[in-house]
Length: 113
Length: 114
Image (tube, rainbow over the protein chains, first blue to last red):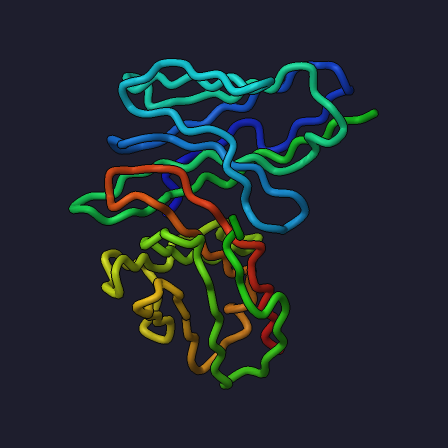
């Protein structure tokens, strides 16, 4: 079953604009991660935020985490056509030493030149 | 550092056949996980191996199995293939031992069952 739910399902913006994607999840987590996928290829890790962190930056990416609301957001600033991809949030809720990511259904981002 | 390597990249099989997919993790990574991606169900966790032991299994029928070798390479097998098994199968490796960390994914194996 899906743990995370991304919102919106699809987003179309112009180059240079900012893109914001939201993710909600259901259970307690160790960390939350964001991945990018281009055209059905493999997933590329973007950023990881731990449950005791509230905000994290990496280049043009900014991720926030609100554990009280069980939600996270990914902001991509000054978007480029190359940012066109599907973005997934994934929660790491592994227990007993095991590792398991539970993914949302993703946001399909289109950045128009 | 070489990435996660999955072979083959594409595969076409007939219903009822079986298939074996291979995954070589990043050198030094001992955790290998498998995921199935379909348009309808999205990304679903199959199983995770660490030091040749299956530590976690997703909600898939027994036709889906896997194993990990002493060099951390992993294989997954699907027997008695069904049309619904058509999917992108992704393997991921991780350097951590259960404390949570980033995963590196391979490019996937696209399986088509006809």
